[in-house]
Length: 534
Image 1 (cartoon, rainbow, N blue to C red):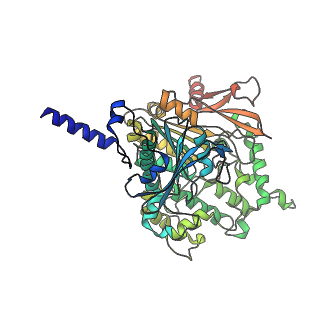
Image 2: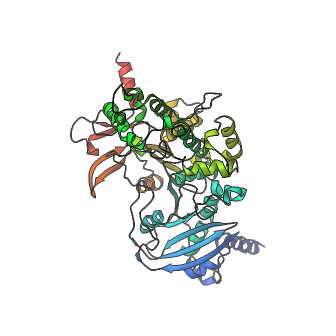
Image 3: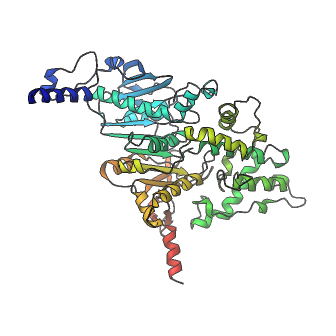
């Protein structure tokens, strides 16, 4: 009786831990304790739910074979040469195409998935390349629709849901199964990496599917997608919708120069960089044209009003509630298209025209920031946004989040990341005071704000992957991240990125272009010291 019971248990364990392939898991393999490894070509025969593997092929080492090799996230390094790998192409029903690249040699024992941009529709090969070189089994997906055209997928509820959250999760689950089949063991650690929409996908994973990943890198994330696209509409309404309020592109450097001159010194270092635009109180009124002044050197009264509205960002006209933060001071050189027209950003136009209202005649000028925005929130936020501050499940499973946002971003304005981080801290506060809640949050989630603005010499290049790996695998949290700026291929400035709310403070000695001369400091500590000294 006991013998039969033991055999039954053994059979159940083998059934749960073995991926079925054409050649069964043999008795000799069990005796030698050698896990079954499925050859690359045979992975096409894996029996995965709702999944068809259309290609399982070894690719020889050589030059990057997928077109443009430049990575889409500025923190990555291009990979002109790839090692040999097993290339898997598959489709998860109904139409989620994915690729998984498996190193033939030198696998680091880990799995990573890379995110998308915009509305996805393609696989970011150039982002996958550097991670394959690192030894990762690396995956990417189009999230369920191919190409950049908004139709027909934006009219299909299933494809909208696949884009919103299901696609990345399904590819994650299937990819891990394939990794296990190919190497004979599961990945020891799993990471998600992405910026923009990819950053939003990372937060979605932490909120909806906390068991998927051990560590998540979320860069410049567009996680409040509906309100972000409403900001694009706002920028159009308050500027180029009216010829008088249009700010021509030629005046953007004029505005930026004035902002830098007014606020560069607020961080204690004159380097052409504003470390925290929230501390900049540059008044647009200072650029108002005086009588007889060259109009190319100043702003009209209507343009001054438009500039103030862009900085302010949209609000609900009925409640006065902030919809989304405005574009920050210091980022003006990157405003082309935002305020110069002639059309609002395509992602906003497509989103509201086809996904939300399904109206080919939709006009951004008529958008109502109360009624229309409320309709969009009610019908789509639960599907495509990643704004839930409840990360308790991800925290409990030991997951780590490394979140960074460039102050110079004009596509997804940086203050929204700070707002979300503080929402997470507040949610986790419970009976703790705010300082305790912040320290508790920093145990698993850290935000790094990256100083700089468009056209500046700010150090914005860095590699977050090693920092997250040390945190997840060795329990060493990132206390500072080294960022650099290069000119003509030579690094000419470095700076420490600090975990929010800390900022890099100059020690007062040595070059301000050298990160070693800065220390991370909580500005609240400085204020407390001042208050105690009164």
